[in-house]
Length: 458
Image (cartoon, rainbow, N blue to C red; front, side):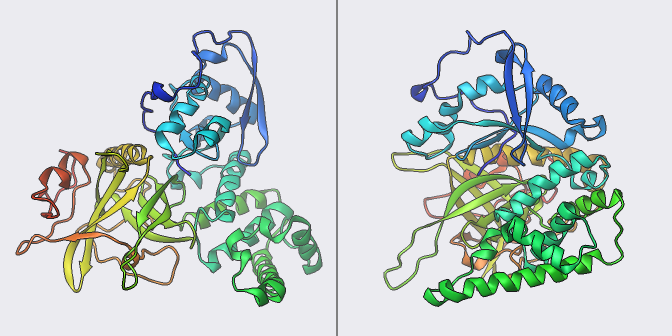
């Protein structure tokens, strides 16, 4: 899935299957604004054809009781199984819905049939640009629950890969949010069976693996083992808890705080593919489907199938560019450049991400870098404290592979490596205008990017 807050390019009219919006109705119309929980806010809006997100937001916040102090935490999205876009206050949702098929042709590889059947819904969910630290300062239970619902869905669907200690802790917190704390084992076990284990633990964790024997008896045994582990974690969490009304807010905030350990929490997500390393004596290769998460903290490339991080970089650790197809059969490509090592030699690495959303990803990265530059210039650190994805000042250390799903697996990536012999490789400046593509020498030969060590925008 993908998300974007940058300006949307003008749709390609060659594929347009929508009529003009000039004749949009001005009388009152019913509008449904969906929440992540699948519930909806029902509004009656005058002149929906020219109503902006900013105007619609006031009505939704009033209906949900969102306080002014937390209004920036949430934003409007147009979402469907094929595309997700975060909207700006100036956008007019009705007009964008009319242009939806044009956007799908431009930013997805979906078939014509799938595009013709796809319809977006208007969602009210987390703002990509809302700082994490501010979330934990929110007191309104309704807003916290909206944020919790979205985080929980991303955990259960594997969009936020996490280690066993995290998904067990989050599962226990979900139990406490849904049923309160201090329940005896029998009541908790009954509640789990009623809601199903998949309501508390990620679906890929419950699926298990193995062949015929696993299908017959392994899966049931694993489910029982996971249920016991979840019960144990819940009782550990419940010790010393009370049933006061404030405990619900406490558990909601604790769930979000636990999710903040994941560096890609709050990202907008895009779909793409990367090259697989050549394998076998025939050096066969192919492409692997990935999810690309982009937030105020950095860029994260995740294996959709294996549910782990392949590459995670904060903006100080990368340079990037977007290239358009040059010929028939070529792809849009987002290029990520970062420091690495090859056989003990420091090198610059280039990762190619093939995606029709490359233009959106590049625009979002640029916008996030600009926001960080403004914020870092006003104070030290965006959130007042270093996040797990933020690198310390000075030259960064090597990225090392660990067992955690959160850690990068650079050795599994098929990258283009290059080095400028005899010269120190400097930390790369994250600015498209200083792209390595403008300094490219004869074909198949790369030279290191010669940029200033400072990260200030010049």
